[in-house]
Length: 203
Image (cartoon, rainbow, N blue to C red; front, side, top):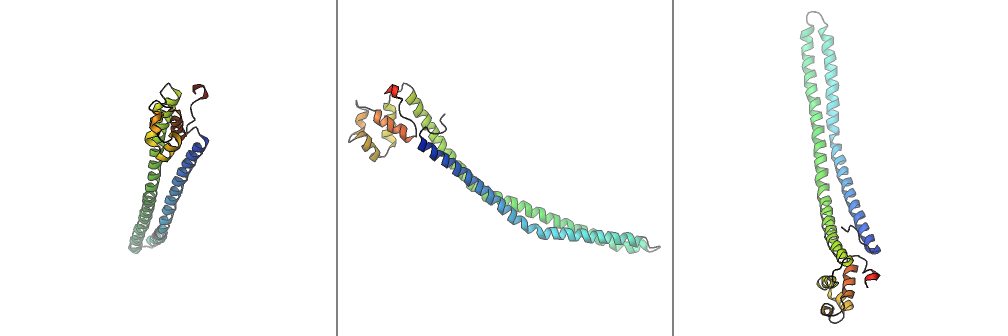
């Protein structure tokens, strides 16, 4: 299976297309990561809420411990502090949940933004390259085997623009298939696919 052409200019074009596809994918991955980081910045209020809740809970818990050491009324004095500590922990948990929600939203948004252009590039590259690989492999097999060059000439007649056919085949390109010399059209078909022409030994 042909992966790259045999002609230097066509190979350079294919390599450029490969690099361009990789660069496109890398760019959109970078954009997705940037969006993820940008949205992630909105988690800052959640971190502040978490920190404040933890600080209040720790202070209230310490106050409850101190109050509980007071004789007779210690438990009565400590109970409101424990209630405040529990409420502060719930506030802290709400801050953590807000951060998780923002991170999930950032990740999802980054993926949604990046995946479309990446899939489009991969689909375009795959379809284009696979179509060329099939055609080039078949043409190379015909060239290297014992197939009649009129098969490649026929491909040239079917696929090439009329202006190119006129330059190669003259006023009546079809005459190459009807008892004429099919080699010029066959060579043109090979060149159009980026393949080398017939080996000298087969001329």
